Image 1 (tube, one colour):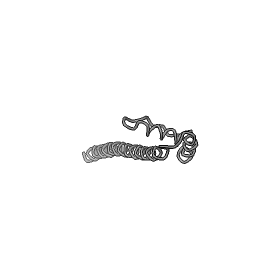
Image 2 (spheres, one colour):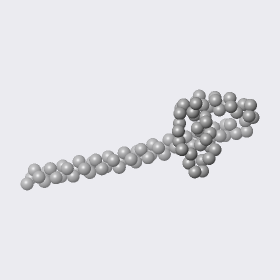
Image 3 (cartoon, helix red, strand yellow):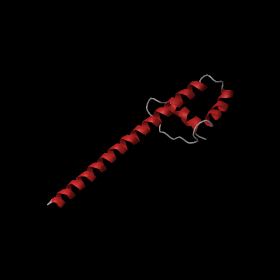
Image 4 (spheres, helix red, strand yellow):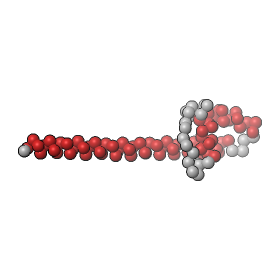
Length: 95
């Protein structure tokens, strides 16, 4: 009787720890994704501010210069409300 009860509690404990791990793993992944999105959005706003008002003859050179500063490939689907700023992030960070 004791061993059955101990086995049942052991299985229950392992199951509870496994479920907790799954839930915490998802939360960590969501948090990291949110931080990445916020970081990219902030960069896009800075890039938009930087290239706003540049004459067309200097625009291409500045975008190429900015593209060397960040990662080579960043692919994020545009979100509602980001519009042009998300496009600026894609142009400036990909080659």
